Length: 345
Image (cartoon, rainbow, N blue to C red; front, side, top):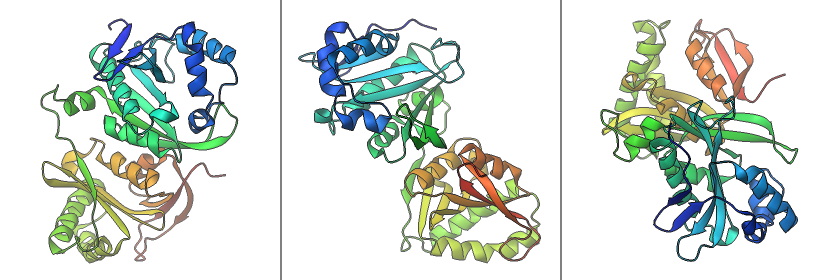
């Protein structure tokens, strides 16, 4: 592993280590309640408090003041800290957590995205990390947009997470791997193409799309729903075609011009999620589920009990079982588990 940097530069920014002389500038930024409260920490109450933060929290080797390249003005903070479970060394575990914020007067200028991008390049090409995590609390859409722009993919959610303020919030966790970053920036070979995601309107769900979606569904269930016979699949096919056309919101992922997966959401419930077998294990399902959870507010899902991999998948995303039916919706002997976001009593 390589050593920490003293300074990182971009087209507009210089990321440098904090000094106690920055206390007045930090206080002017961090005293704004709009900054800290969204991230779960209290606004600074004095320059003395800001100076103490610089001496302690911001003294970590990979925490930087985000400054403007022309005049050196401090406009925010960004840093990498060891991932949970690490021994305190940033590089020993190969994973880190990315954090960032900018002052209110600098919002909407892409500064957080630019600073985060510089740290990610440093993380993967200098420090040699294999993965970087990032998280935001429910409702912090601006932070989520930064993660999306930087190439992070949704990984899981943790309801009832205690913040430093003492309240409980749902926290959404996102992940970017070294392979994903290098692929995104044309620095790696033999890695699958970047996946695009879009919403499919009812008008767009014409015969051609529905046929493509049903074909993917068949491939997916043959590869994962081993308890279904060919007769079962044939009987379910018209129901799937009808559901694809009628579902309130349908999101589709494409890779190399082909349908890679799709998810349907109605009344905050994930009604369908299928991924092409050729892309199993590539994060497509997690990406689609992440959109359903964080953008569409999905909190419910049903899975076949005989498909334990699906139940495990949703448990990793923060769901848990709250009830069970002995048959499926058509009365067939396929038990259904009903899951809800959050821990159940």
